[in-house]
Amino acid sequence: MKLVTWIRTCAEAFLVAALGSGCSPQQAGVAAGAGGADAPPIGRMKVSIMPEYDDASVLVIYEGRFEDAARYPIHASFLVPRGSIVNDACSLSVEGRHFCQLYQTVDRGGEDEVRMLLPYPSYYLSFHTPPLDLAIGDKSIDYRIRPRHAVKRMEVDIQQPLRSTGFRVLAPAAGAGASTGEEASTTVVDGFNHLLYRLDEVAADEPKVFQIRYRKTDPTPSVNVKYASMRESQIPSAPYDAQRRVRTIVYALFGTGAIGTLALAAWILRARRARRRAAR
Image (cartoon, rainbow, N blue to C red):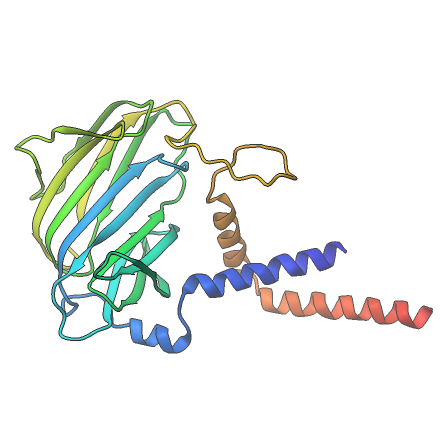
């Protein structure tokens, strides 16, 4: 039975990998041209950066609108920190309805590139970065924004985690002025402190780095979400740990020749069943 359970777990991991890529081979080929100097420009791009919001990581949201494109769908491409978990990849209709899109993730070394086709000019992409080291009280996050499309106006909203102190942003990206003055001012929204920045005319593939510093010894995120069924003990767990574990399993399986291992395990299982039937 343990072997059957192991095979089932591996099969589910492969299924998640296939769905997570978000593209069939044909769609992947269509999305391959996204990004770069010839990509359609973005008119407005808002970047929301929320450390330790609902998970022991950084929740990031890219949203905005492309400038009028010559034709649709639009080939869109966004760079995210390597190992990030994509939550939503959507195109927004004129009425503001979210239409989830198939997407493809491509390893770009230190970053992952998320590609998708947008039927509407507005987009919404949310993801969680790899987890932070909660054992370290003094947090240091250097978040780099490198748009694959030229951006006419970029708005950066950095949110302070609850129960943290000494929150500040050091050496904001070159050309980034506080949206409310020469120095960043704090805006309070729903009990959270925010620092707002604005950048104009950001070129494609031009990196903008924001260095975020704060102190937080409390391991609980700002919004504590508990995921546990009625049959399980009510133990709080990070909501994206399961997805990270599956992703780790998928990488390990592909790296060690999992297809051959699965085939061998299936053959052994069939052989055992055949011997049992013959012994009856």
